[in-house]
Image (cartoon, rainbow, N blue to C red):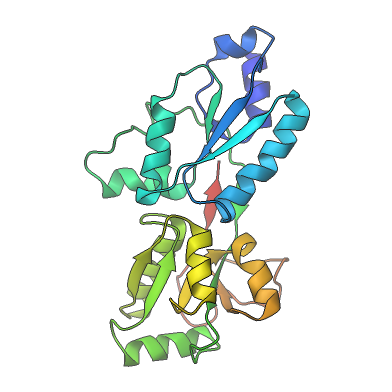
Length: 254
């Protein structure tokens, strides 16, 4: 049991790893697959690849990233749930597919509690409200005023229905009393591509997905979605302190 706990702590991922497999003492004896339920390039994918590099160094085994985007993470988690429970399939999970989807879908093809063994929280993901420069807003108050002036005409992209960035947009709608339309994508990277291209006006993106474009000026950062400011972006206010009291959305990968 102690060996099971020790190896689980190293992974930082949600996985199906029976203790009996690890107790054999030769785990892992072959390459391991990490299913990432979003398209390459977003925050979840970046996190999984960083963990995979460290796991490969530690375990001396190849770690294969298997991106399976679709349906707000349902596609990837279903594949993980149906994989052999032998410790060689890990699933990179987040708040949406694992904890929110059961409340949104009546007949999910997996059970978050029964089909997965939670290992540990790997990353607390920082999200930021970013807009295309063509949108004439430079603050949360500007955005609220603009959205109220054009109800239903402003949209926001997300990495998928039920994921943290989608929830952020819906919470913003409710607390700010505006009506922005949700546009789901198969991951944060495809949504960011359309934001940079001006196809959508704003996203509540992970900082890891948005950072390079923020630095280049191709998108404009407005506020953080977290409950408090971050040392990474100390001058950027939270949505709550910038004009929408009570707003706070934080994401995690496990």
